[in-house]
Image (cartoon, rainbow, N blue to C red; front, side):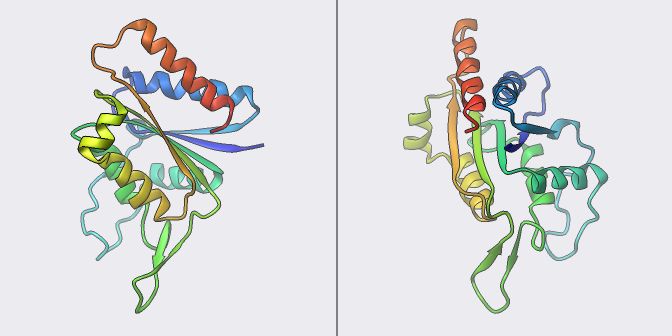
Amino acid sequence: MKKIAIINGHPNKDSFNFGIAEAYRSGAKESGAEIQDITIADLHFNPNLQFGYQKRMELEPDLLKAWETIQWADHLVWIHPVWWGGLPAITKGFIDRLFLPGMAFKYRENSVWWDRFLKGKTGHIITTIDQPGWYYRLFFGRPSVNQLKRSTLEFCGVKPVKVTYVGVIRGSREEQRHQWLKKVRALGKRLK
């Protein structure tokens, strides 16, 4: 049985991202997966990595529970919007506070290399955008994907990490949104 953590990075519970999370969950449950949710908007924590890596901040109980869920999971599904080319601030803060040296990775002494502590896990980023995915890749270089996929998840050993773009959200109609939810539900059903 596959263990999946669905990590929702949208701060607004009335957003379409919550519908996407529910669609994925529904499909994955149909396939018999075990699912745990991390809704970043519900967590109580300081998103500011106040001292960088110079001084360790105590992890709040919600972050400790989220880290347990991430360690438990075989597959990490990240759902978030693209804002100003990147992740919402609360999602970035979640990563800054949780994906720490000694937890998610460890730099090797006197070396440019590091150890990846999340090896064996796979990932999927499902992101909503207000432009076609090809446009976001070609003209902007997909900065949110590079940050989350390459500079965070793969850096810590999560591989492979698939990416699904949902959009153009702005101005979309109900029928189009219904089709996107069907597509995401199918992804969940195939445990992708």
